[in-house]
Length: 133
Image 1: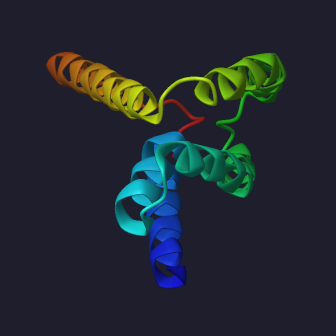
Image 2: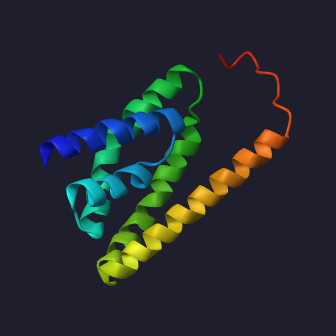
């Protein structure tokens, strides 16, 4: 189990750092599929696990000038009541419904990412500015 957790953590951290995807998109499926955690347990574990990953990733992105600190803090503070409500709801509904809702979210995110990638591919790429290296 420890080896599986190490592998999930390393791979999810790598992909999250490269692509900027949220930890839940990576950690939750990894914890369910590779470590055998229940959906709600995986979601709760992911919420805590993403804190150090997010801090390290944000600090590194800040060095490159890519971090919008004010926006990040505003989103983070405003997400707290939503997280409290979400935890209350997920503990009141059947786990199977949570699994289905998570799968639908993953499909929606994948669809949006594919749509944006295809749209960007069709448009000419802008010249990189001095802030991009």
